Image (cartoon, rainbow, N blue to C red; front, side, top):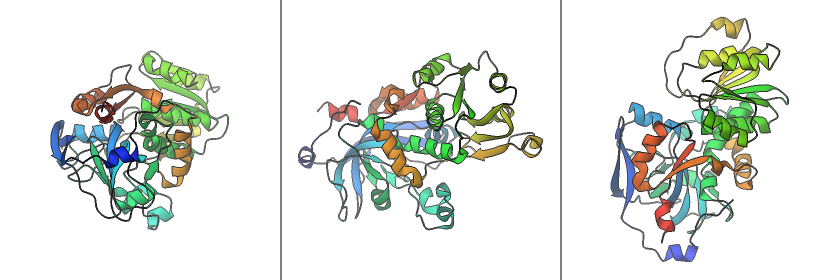
Length: 373
């Protein structure tokens, strides 16, 4: 993998940190503005990271689209960059280190942590990275303050040969790895992934790596062609073929052993259930907005199909996840199709919210500017 431009610790130390910075600030439903805000101050045990790359996640897009969160906030949590300041008590990192930052880390002690449901931990639900205002990730800004409990357990130091772009996939790959582990895939099982956006494609890659015979489905043939470059065949063009019929034809009429729905919204839940064989598993991976949906309860009871969900990352998988992404076995950065500077952040978010057929991962890169220096 190509190494992105970096600066040595000594060159960073010579810099005088600015008092203000640019950021894409959320002000409510469908309202994000590029503004000048104060660079956050850090405290004991905290670090300040200058953002190089931040991937745009579908969960942030949903928050912006629905206005579900109070304003103002600065979103963005798939963040990689360089440490430019460290508070007293920081021992494992130094100025100049290239890092990736998780925004959630659980307490490891509560009821939910003891039951390995880390995303439900009260501490996990607190966001530990901010560019100001209510902590919300902060990656859509030039600088991010990383709080002490994240510094202790949720900051990953990057090798020099790993790009910031590749590192920005650590958090989303962890979420996908968590879902795949929960499915307990057996070698040779047929698994259908509905949706081949970036997350659906990562899920398909990891399912194949776990031994499944993977079938992918999407409305856009351009995305299926990208899937094929990762060795994912067969695929179903859902604009002209019925994924349920195709997967049944491939399995002597049974249906898939496992179906992952990686498309937001509820209109394909019934399709996902129908595509699974009796006794099969269906995982909802993108249904993060609360609501109601109609299903056939007999498909769960009589047909013994199992309906599952998976949300966010798992701290138990962090080491394995980091080894996979940083080890170079899979070039996740190749999923990036659009790169925008921070000054183009509003345009980037609009493009991500209304992707073209050939759009995959879209990233905002404040680092474009400091790489020019």
